[in-house]
Amino acid sequence: MDRVQSSASVCAGARGAAVTRKCRSLIRKTNRKRSSQPFFALIVGYILCCTLTASAQASKSGAGHETFSYSGDTGPGYWEEINSACATTATSRQSPIDINRVQVDRSLPALNTDLSATSFTVTNPGYTIKATPDTAGKLTLNGTTYTLLQFHLHTLSEHTIKGNHGVMELHAVFQDENSNLAVIGVLYRIGKPNRFLGRLLSAGLPEKSTSDPITVNDLNLANAFTDLSSYYTYPGSLTTPPCSENVTWLVLKQQAELSSSQYEQFRKVLGNDFRPAQARNGRIVRATPGNHD
Image (tube, rainbow, N blue to C red; front, side):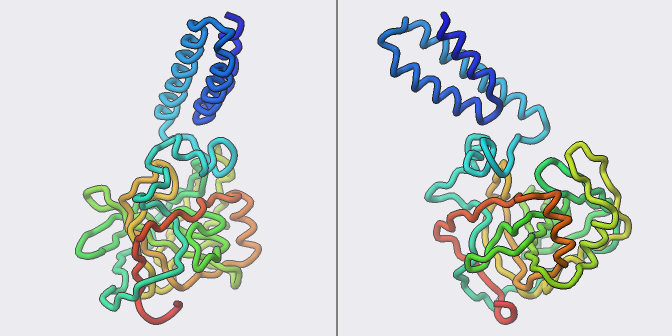
């Protein structure tokens, strides 16, 4: 039983996805030595590992969102262990992607938004800065109305253009009545100070998940967008677990600017909170004609 107790100790020291990996490793090592161990010890060790894995997963579910990060044992390379939808397969439609080949579609209209100034509650869920509106705006796309849920930020940008990152990316997330999502993405480059982002910084960013929410009054998300008539669009997913593939992406071609000082303030809080580009798997990226190609 000494080896079984050792097995339980290793598994007990793991959390979340790490439980599964440590248990797998332990089982492989144990199997290589099984000729010198009683068979029941192998069975007991396996049961202990599986029980701890299930317990960790249940704990994550009860926490309100699945535990993930952008590095280490809970980084993007292991997200498929958190949620299988995050796995890259031959048919997956995961986001972000590198936008390097497009099909110009002259029928694409300018994006139709209905946004006005409202109060936003800014929080730090532990993996981004998220702002939730008091009064939701609208996006109308192909005759369907989507309601603004929130916007959040990533450094560096998640989408790349011909392999090149922006220094930051804003995602404005809208949802229709069937829970399908449409997300407007804005990439940033270093340049002039950004008035919209300056409003967030002046209010103070919540630096940790334990930080108190911050209210920003009279903020209009429309001021974050560049040219709504010039964009790329493709079918994709959420860029964080659960990686649901129910997203219509609308990535604006024209990048916004922010100052190097503003960028450093966001980077200090956000770190590197971007998912690497995922396989396109034959998906067509459509683009409006003209400017900012």
